[in-house]
Amino acid sequence: MTIMMPSDLPVNPTGIANDLTDTVTEVFPLFAGVQMLARHGVSVEVTVAPSTIVATITVTPTAAPVLPAILAEIDDARPGSLPGGRLAVTGTMCQGTVTLRVLIPQDWVTADELAVLTGTATADPSRLL
Image 1 (tube, rainbow, N blue to C red):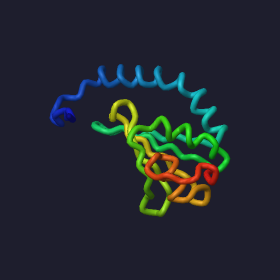
Image 2 (cartoon, rainbow, N blue to C red):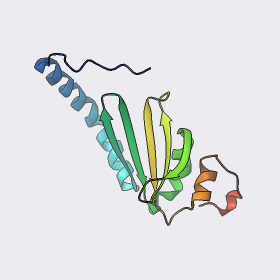
Image 3 (cartoon, helix red, strand yellow):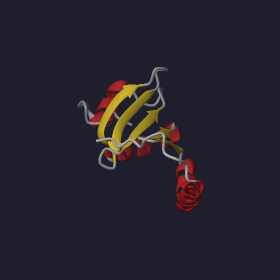
Image 4 (cartoon, rainbow, N blue to C red):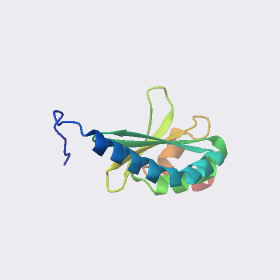
């Protein structure tokens, strides 16, 4: 079920300022974790809209060893590709509230290998990674 707020509600500047302050206060402690991910070749971009949260995780070839662990944490992981041909896995986390999209370098893994990593196909695991 999606709950949509009416678009004609009056804006409360004090409430918005308080929400902004709370958000900034909660985000700063994540900085160290995000920096650690970046140093290991994993970047995360979060897009928030009124009814959706999409986290786009980009894995570089140097971060390839962490991909199976990342994919294991994603519910309903489905391999696919973006319109530009980039390999991607889409799934959910937090009981379906957040949609995750993992982007994988095209030259790092084939679509068949990606399907095996996400559990949608079977293959010889020794040929992966």
